[in-house]
Length: 189
Image 1 (cartoon, rainbow, N blue to C red):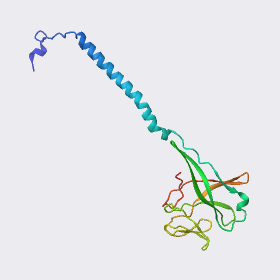
Image 2: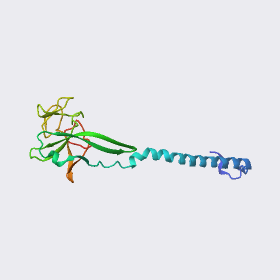
Image 3: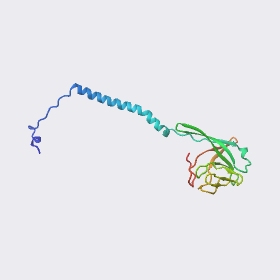
Image 4: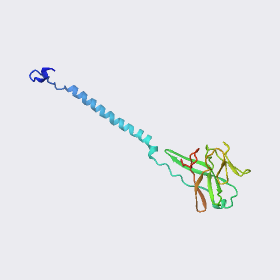
């Protein structure tokens, strides 16, 4: 080790010269520029962050019930009746109104059921075949009974039933989308 470090007489300290006025001003202006840049950057980032987070923070609208028709139209059904319903969705910034086909039919006990026309296999529109008295998917040949139960084909489940209610003599339906290619009915939207 060095003896000069242990001996205070040999250790000479260089006095630090006070900073000159231009150096103090330069460092102050640099700090001021840095703080100002951070402030302006923060102000500019607020709209960008809000734009990115808005769809996550905004609630999508609850899917409302759509009118299908008067109850007396469905009192004597012998085969499924196709009706178009209008659905209004609000997702983020988008407000869309779409029209979807549903089938009103009766189950084995004679109660009304509303079926979606979307095939649970791959999402094709399933029409009612009057000659065969079945729903037959044109895409992959899945067949369903009058009340939507699966008969055959690649579909893992029967046609999906929709929530329905009666209000002021009108049949109302709450249209939803369900996950495809699974055996259990899962709501996705």
